Amino acid sequence: MNPADTPTPMPAEAATPTSPDAPAATVSPRSDTEGAAAASALAEAVAELATARDRWLRSEAELQNYRRRAQRDVEEARRDAEDRALLETIECLDDLERALAAAREAGADPAWTQGVELVAQRMRDTLNRAGVATLSPVGEPFDPREHEALIELAAPDGVAPGSVLHVERAGYRRGDRVLRAARVTVAAAPTGDA
Image: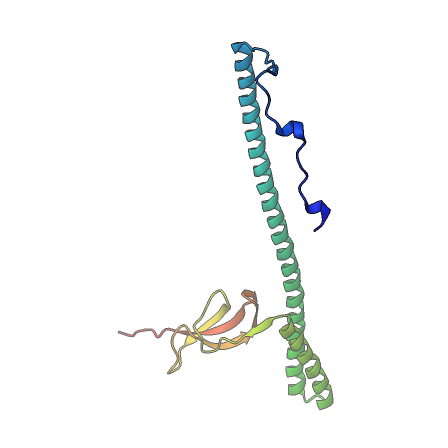
């Protein structure tokens, strides 16, 4: 057993009760006004303490809210900056795809078109790694949050009115945010000749 773990005994004089012959401790009598003043001062101090504690708690809550808002603002600014950079990459990819289409129509050297296609594919892969997905809404109902309608055409047989017929320019999404709406042709409802 460790000596530090053993309790120390109380001194003998502290353990013995006071004898009836011992002189009593003297207490100075206070007037009622002094007691009332002390009670009033104590009540005032307790009220000040409660007010200070309330102000402290409110300040602490305000600081916590400020930190959360600041963190949210930083995250949103970072996400917006990333989205702008991704949109620039998407615009460059659009240019490459237009160049490829024009080169194929003009009968460009296949080695050149293959090189440009590899660059475009690398850009698509980079976008995929960043969580960007292409919106392919052909046959889906028109959604103004994801699609930008350019024109309405008569719905062919078997196609529901309000459905996307053709994508003129691809749209892109990152997570739950639409980076760029898809420009689409929409099937119009048939007009009744009654």
